[in-house]
Image 1 (cartoon, one colour):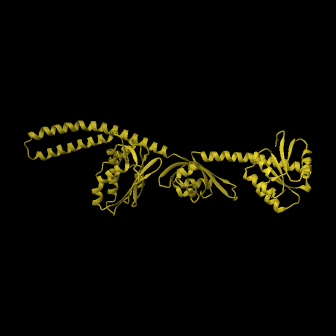
Image 2 (cartoon, one colour):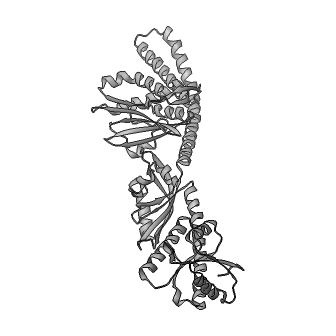
Image 3 (cartoon, one colour):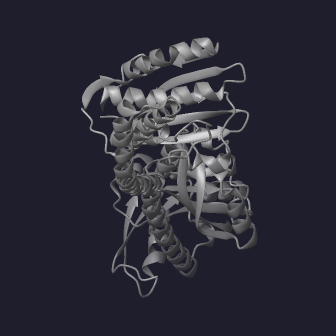
Amino acid sequence: MQQSSVTRILIVDDDEDDFIITSDYIRSIEGVHYEIDWCPTYARAVEHIRQRQYQLYLVDYRLGAKTGLDLLKEAVRLNCEDPIILLTGKGNKAVDNEAMVIGAMDYLIKSELNTEKLERSIRYSLERAGALKALRANERKYRIIFERSKDAVFIADEGLRFRDMNNATSELLGYAQSDLLNLSLYDLILEGKDKVYAGLEQSKEIDDVEITLADRQGEKKYCIISASMETGNEEGGSYVQGIIHDITNLKRAEKATLQAEKLAATGRLVRTLAHEVRNPLNNIQMSVEQLIPVNQSEEDTPFLEIIHRNSKRINDLITELLDSSRPTEMIFKRVILQTVLDESISAALDRITLQRISMKVSYPDVPCYIQADADKLKVAFLNIIINAVEAMRDRPGELSIKVTPSALQYAVEISDNGCGIPQENISKLFEPYFTSKRNGMGLGLAATLNILQTHKAHIDVRSRENVGTTFVIAFPVQ
């Protein structure tokens, strides 16, 4: 190891003769220049250590009422990273072991000292101290990166049971770090668990595997995970180090964009079809309206009225389709979310009462203010509530409506214990004209999504057949 031109050494010894002998040995070392000072007391030695004035300390075991071990402990408390060599008059294995455990670089017996032994001990101590300083500096640097990373970084055992994690991991999953130490990542993976397990088992690493996690509130988090299995932890076994990148907002943005494109394409198709259908339909209506007053046949009258009535019905349907495909104009005001929900519940209360559905409403004590078009938002909530009521038609119904505030959003949960939705249909729920109802047009939830997206809210659906469905709508805090 390359040393500086002058290395400052402090000899802490209450015996001046021993100091002179030891310093003479050190000055006899060839090829290096040492500046040597003497400190005869424990108190002054502590002050020198505090001031970081020396690169190496030679400390006698006997220091009056104190010992060299006491000085070692004080040096550790003061975060001294410079090497300390303990000197003693007689060999004592117990003292030797204790000194090395506390942090001494070496342990030498005074009666056995010579220039060669001191040269080797000093050189070894300085080299090892330099290596430890570099290691601690790297550890601090990587710990800072670890703690400040915006992505979740974690260390786990072979079963992905958390052993250490940064703050971003805690924020992503919604658990305190102490709680995560009792959990395995496998417990939180909703989708992609098999890929993670197979990758770590077969190739000892995974790279950019897409998974879906559930946070403490049960909200889905779409993420990409990379991890590798390493060997050589403190217990001699293996451990996993990994990083999780949250792509939930990206997924929601992609989903919203795709849905907007679908709505736009559907709107163009509807307007084209409406134009093509309405022209001949208008001709039929006008012709029938001309024929009815002059018709002389009683047999023809019912048929003319059927034609007139149904052509009007078709015209009304076309108008409804056109209205559903047009962008909704909103008038935003500062409103209380709980008030809008209460008005939506009131609008559905007759249906809820008729079906004898038990309802539980849970709100926070403080009002949740959002920027919204209250009338349009009420329509969106009402569509979801009515769907929930209809899903519980053949069973004792339980409806739950809950608002959960957090620092960034207000989450509205509307849950039922109805028939549930097949998994293959969940992704189609908000598509225009998709419906599982016999007489439905499939426009209610499409309009609901349009309204919610205009409010910059995102919606998530969790459902199990014959168990129930939960709609989670999250509004940004403004």
